Image (tube, helix red, strand yellow):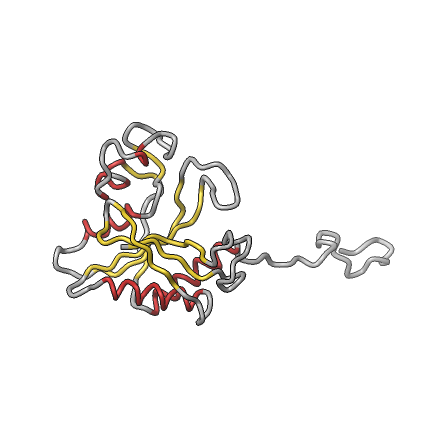
Length: 206
């Protein structure tokens, strides 16, 4: 830009008055990428699927009975009687198994957004990010599951992390377990974050 009196030579009036700073990745994106990287090193591939799903892939294919509470309108965002926002990333597992030959091994993780009719509080949100894993092959045992999760969580948090597997029930896995980690805030001593137990529940498995 040049003024007639040459007093503003070299001044660009279209330029921002302040330095333009680049943004950063969202914390959820950072953690999701870390999880993907960890499981990729363990031999898992990444699988994705639609966030708007049909009832069969969300519930029926996972052995949910017709009267299961999770099918209730209070828990799920239904668009029609048969179409809804997925409540977990398990439909990705169903679609992956449908697209594979019966005898071919499967080793995937399925990260993505899921939706439930939950009120906002410290531990609930109507939309959140979930990561599920699926491993199908010969001679796969529960000890493989425990070893995989222990290694992955220790890489994600710290090498001294302890894991606890509690027997539980899920309609689509047997045996099933709830998995807790030693509290990352108090290291198992008991605090407000872990409600004095020394443990934090982080996932279900089976």
